[in-house]
Length: 415
Image (cartoon, rainbow, N blue to C red; front, top):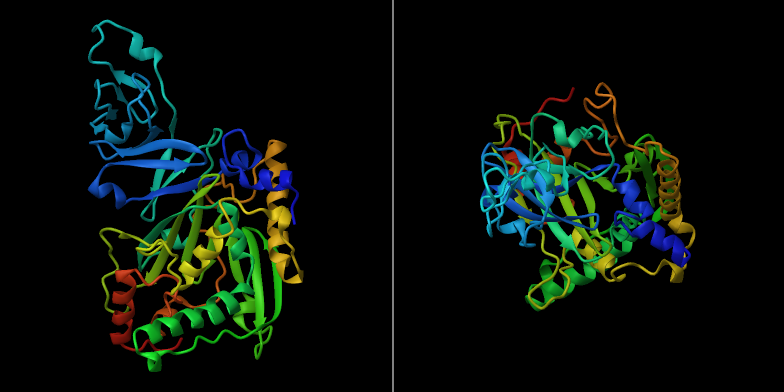
């Protein structure tokens, strides 16, 4: 368990908090690029700050305070122009740096606009996501994680706003043994009930997840590797030999997916499931636009949707409460990974408090060309076996199309 003050230190993400200071050392995704196609202005909440993301008429991105300083009207209804975003109320216009360019109702020779600035943060696009940096200058490099920059793949992005603290999402990723219960026994219970209600009980196929015989965790250069041996397996299996990576501070790698958990504020998390699919033989590798889709959290009755893996995880995260009361928890030996992750967070908080760069802050362009992450499964074999989703979230249309394309693809000779 954690003391109340320790829990506060690890969960609160506002500008004046220790964890807020650590997380501001990183680039965080705030939107999918495709989200600005329908409307070039989007409300953004990140690390306790309310902002507006926009694309001007020249195609450039800006991220600024969401409120006009004149009469406090929302910039969500601003008008994108060639040089910036114009307030709908009186026409004050601000550029991407937060500088006021025009005040139409003021005298032509007024210098008032030169004395008005608003908060603005740098943004960059990479791999169909828009990233923002809210920390001190100089900004580090935007990390070129392999899934964001690799060639000959298709991608899509599933997003959900989750009403709980970011740490609940991340600690789940350091807890391998939950899979045999939440994604095994409980999954079977949910699917069996669903089949019985549909009067199709004979269609129910049990999901079998063997018991964990052994788990292990190692800190590596980018975060933590979690390892497991299931009953009937051995340490020669890829689940132990290669392991399952968590990228510090807030990314889980699941096969060929990133789950990115972005703290919006203390009690809300923007969750992006970033999926990479291999292009089958004969397929066209070019993808004009990376699609984005919603992954629902609850049904029409307000109950969690738990007939898929990510939905089960989200229910577990949210039902711990807006911020989990870790002072009441009882941790056992199987919680070693959670304890290690909390220790790593504390260590990196101390690095920042001493003025240093924490883990995964990159400043050398040569080091940042492509950051390869170890993973258990071969991408092409995963696609050919129709195991791209692993049941994570069955809402991607592209995933179904890719699996069908691979089912029709000719065999590739073994190398």
